[in-house]
Structure formats: structure tokens, C-alpha cells
Length: 122
View 1 (cartoon, rainbow, N blue to C red):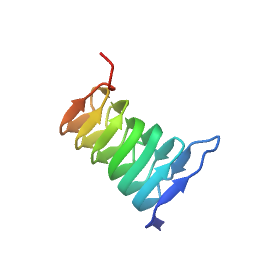
View 2: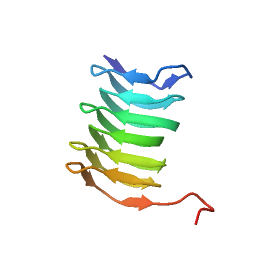
View 3: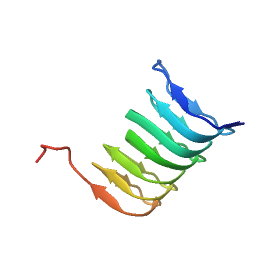
View 4: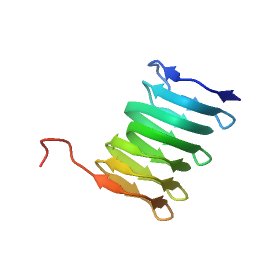
């Protein structure tokens, strides 16, 4: 199943999930936590919420989210996250601009990491 457009979700009680057989090319904007089990190519904006890339998730995108938990594969740039988690078995290639990062043993990362604090925080 393929979707070639923008995907916008509204606020609801349960997080949005892109299933393992879903492929999205384009822009995703979510106003709730989002889990990606399939493939995404483009841009992902989950500002203020958690983005999870499941173990078999494959993402090639620029990402903006409050927190990003990578268990699968992410190729792209991360901008402005509070915390990025690269889990055991995960692969990240790209640049990270975040306030914090956790890389578990067995997590792979290649790229530039810029850890910045919020303005006004000493």
C-alpha cells in the first residue's frame, strides 16, 4: 500500500501507527505520538510528541519531534529533539541537532551530533 501525499492526524487518545505494509512518500504531520513500522521517505513533523521507528521500520526523512526512539533504520537529519534514543540493533545515518542523545550498545550512528541546550539554560 502506498500513499503519495501529506498525512495529517488529529489529536486522539491512542498514538498513530503506520503499519509494516505501509509505504509513505511525502510529508507526515502528526499532532500525537507516531510509530512507524513500515517505510517513509520525505519529511516527518511530530513536534511536541514521540516518534518511534519500530525494529523493522525504514525511514529516509528529515525529522522534527520532541523525542525520537530509533529501533529500526533512520537515514536523514534530526532537528530540535529533546532526546534521541538509538537502540541496540538500530541504524542512524545523518546529522542530529538535539538536547540529548542515548546510544545503546549495538546501536549504529554515522554523522554529526550537535547537543544544544534550550536558550537561557546554563
